[in-house]
Amino acid sequence: MRCMHITSGLLSIVGAAFLFGTVHALLIEPINIAKVSTRTDGEVTGGQGRRGDPGSTDPLPDEPAETDAGEVEPAEETGSSQSPIDIDVPDEVLDAPVPEGTLTLRQSYELWEQGAYFIDARHEHEFEEGHIQYAAWLASSLFDTDSDRAFAIAQSMPPESTVVIYCVGGECDASHNTARRLEQIGFTDLRIMGVGYTDWVEAGFPTGEGSAP
Amino acid sequence: MSKHSNPQTGMLESILLQLPLRIFLGGVFVFAAYNKIPAIQSFAEAIKGFQLLDAETHPELIVVGAFVIPWFELLAGLMLIIGLRARSAAMGIGLLLALFIYALLHVIFTDVSADCSCFGDENFICGSTVGWCQVIRNIVFLIPAGYLMIRGPGRVSLDQALGRPEQITYNPQNASQSVDA
Image 1 (tube, rainbow over the protein chains, first blue to last red):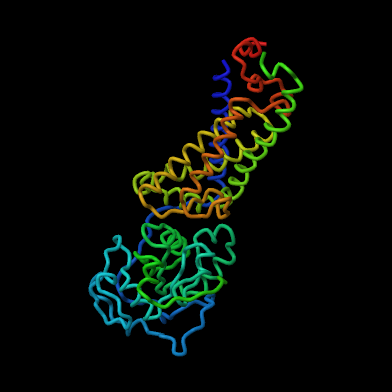
Image 2 (cartoon, rainbow over the protein chains, first blue to last red):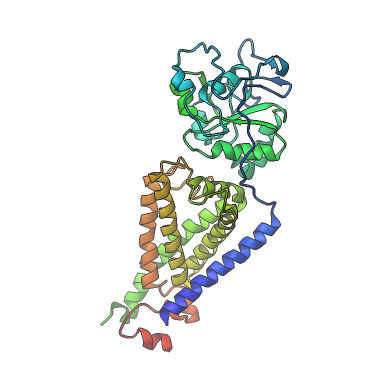
């Protein structure tokens, strides 16, 4: 008898949660967890790709690597561009296998050198402790918690520009989540780093520090 | 003789133990829901990140979970605080904690890098990245949930005021009699 009362009470809570959840789902825009369409070639598109972001706290270089899209030669295949990198990093690190549809460390660095936008999708405190130089912070959750700030960061980049997004590394989902948000608001050339920030640091590539905008 | 046959002892336990535990545990879950409900998209992404369900083949389950779990947390938390069907609420919270522990262990043992998102974008006791801290925290939360499920919400509760059978403290000798009454 007691068990029945407790179980019926529990089912009532579950039922009410389904009811509220259904009403909630009808009131807001549909949520989207579909796979994001990304590219992995080495071409920077969207007018003038450039390093950094207006929101980035890193100082811009004396001679920003502004590059017209037409001047950038696309990489031949994933991990096979083998262009010279001025930092001594073993090829097995630069071309280490990454999940399908994501960038190797070599491709990521080449895009960085060509002036693509870089977005850090990790937590804000992680960004403040260190990030890829000229990257801006834009975690997916910012679109929910402070949409004005999120859209200000997103709108500071031309929608057709090349945007490279990264997170911790491994099978982290944060970069995919931010890419999905950017895709929803019209960004067309999104790239995801298959390696993470730790791999970038271990390779000795440039990093920056400072608070997010 | 049961300790709760003494009304004064029962009231003391209710005020010193059951009520604070209800407010604490219920408050934790209301706080969790408060941070998740305005950010359902982020919570759905967090569920996907746990890789318990294949987002390619079962996206609808992730979406349903993202909408139902926060509302369940809110309702169960509020009901526990006010002491309405509190045993059911404690049982629901216990089951949810068990599910969370399973999901956390899945992430830890499959070496997936995932965010807990247990409290939305906020953290409570542990950091944001899934680790043993969250597992231990949830196991600790299971203790008051189990206690409240067994002992009931105490005398300072709506169940008591409404005379609900759930309120009656477990006592094998007089349980059936009290419930029937």
